[in-house]
Image (cartoon, rainbow, N blue to C red; front, side):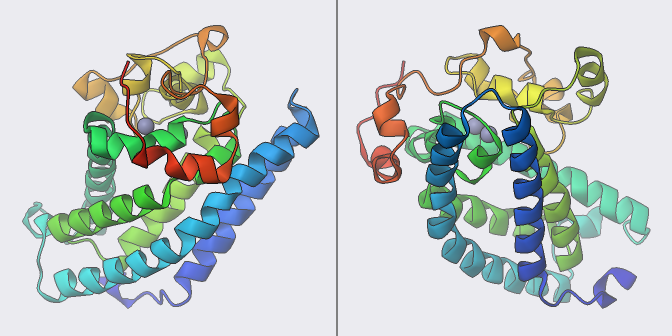
Length: 270
Ligand SMILES: [Zn+2]
Ligand SMILES: [Zn+2]
């Protein structure tokens, strides 16, 4: 297949620049229309962007491992993709792998919510009391390691090419950042787009501080898995409160070093 002949040099740099470009563009749009005072938004952004410093070395190291594994699975024709009927057809190949990887990300997200040890790392992302595009980068370095380790597992199970991973990452970056914007789609547009995709409206429900809403809308790019497995939910914006009910103290959630300690503290599930 031609998919193996594409030059993927410098993809890590290209993906980083692309991530920054989407993030900065949407942040500026938010800053222009947001009711939040600019100084407060800048402080909030500074805390969330600090997580890039801890995530980047782990992300780059682990992605190197993912690509090595990817090479191995491709060379040995290993992985579920080889069992998919008509997988030599590029349409079948790309669409089925994109959907299977999305299902894997949905599974990963459910697992992070269901096991206390993992939830303590993931709740760092949920502990943001003011969700905006900068929340996308709010990920404990422990979760960065866990997430990329799971990615290795998905690559081992499915056997995608590096190009599939690059294309998926490109879509995922756009979807994840837009899902965290302060903006909301108009109700009718959300009803249509939300049939298939995770919209900001749907992800904002996932950031509501109380169950059962925290445990819904787990989807990464697609929301079809939530609809299929009964974890889809809607909530009016006026009833949506960001955060986690066990960690609502602003003095903890607004300091980078305090947030880093959260996974190592006793968890009181409500
Ligand atoms: Zn979550
Ligand atoms: Zn989120």
